[in-house]
Length: 128
Image (tube, rainbow, N blue to C red; front, side):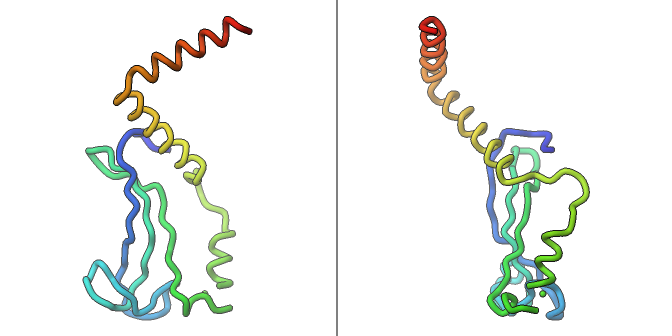
C-alpha cells in the first residue's frame, strides 16, 4: 500500500556492481553505477516520486542473453513461483494509480471537463 497517490512515475534502469558471476543476471554489461562496462546486475525499477520522497513500486531483473539458457532459467522460474510475503503491488494496481493521477491532472488543468461530465451524468440520469 502506498501512503501517497499523487506524484511522478519514474521508470529507471538501476545497476548493481558485482564481483563474481554467481548472482542471477550478473554479466559483463554497462553498469550505470560505475559508468563503464563491468560485472553487474541490471534491473528496471518503478517508483512514485511525491516531491518529498520516492516510493518503490517494483523492480524487474534484466537477464542478459547468456542467462537465458536452461541452467539460473529454472532458478528464476522457482523464484517467480515462490509465494511472496505480504501484499504486493500488481501491474493493474499501478495502472489504476497512474490513471487516477492523469485524470486528476486533466481535471486540474481543464476544470470545465469536470463540469461538463457532471452535467452529462445528470442529463443521463433524468432520461432513465
